Amino acid sequence: MTRRDDYTGLAAVAWELFSGSDPGRDHSFFENILQARPGRSLTVGCGTGRLLLPLLEGGYDIEGVEPSADMRAILHRAAASRFLQPVVYDQLMQTLDLPHTYQTILVPCGSFQLVTDRLEAFEALRRFHAHLEPGGLLVLTIANMLGVFGVTLEEPGDWGLRARQPLPDGTELEKHARLDHIDKLDQSLGSTLRYRRMRGSDIVEEEFCNGDMRWYVMHELTLMLQLVGFSEVRVTGAYTDAAPTDSDDVLCFLATRKFFDPSE
Image (spheres, rainbow, N blue to C red):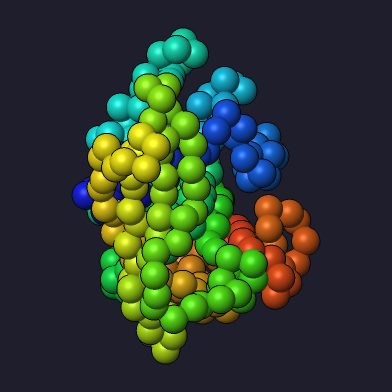
């Protein structure tokens, strides 16, 4: 993620719980890319390991970045149960400074959109570029606010229940979200996430999480990637190789670092 104070406590538990045991529909998309690009890879905002751990089990040379200590703790517990020893760095993407360069960098789940400051967003892209080997590939996904995810862009309102799952102790964990404000011209929104551990109708525990984000349109982010030095940017829709459409809920940006840059 991009803010250390987010996704701790119940939010980290919820991320793991609501992710389930399925690696997700993006897993095969990313795995196909890694199959075609042997070498060290990195997943930024790896959370509790939904993608990282299955890819490690698949034999890929992949590391992770996750600034939430609670998320990392859950990840390492899950890794130990699967006899894995992942390398996970405690860093933010906008200040990324790692000891290696990579053949491929993955930024899944729209994590880039959590960098709400525009200058910091540019800095994150610069650091992705700097951490790629010549010819390396950045694969960055964002929510398409014109598609399924963003059809409403609703006005600020009341809490809405987003998910509910039972916990081993007999309680239930609920996730609620509330849109606090939206600036369509600035392409930013502020929201609050609320996590509740419930026993029947009683609230056993309650925590809140910042859900602020920024959104991008296709040509805007393409230009940003080009400005920080990527030589080729291709955009696909919804974890496919097909051109994106308005109805795609996710846009996938595949940006290549030049093999040779005379300015470097």
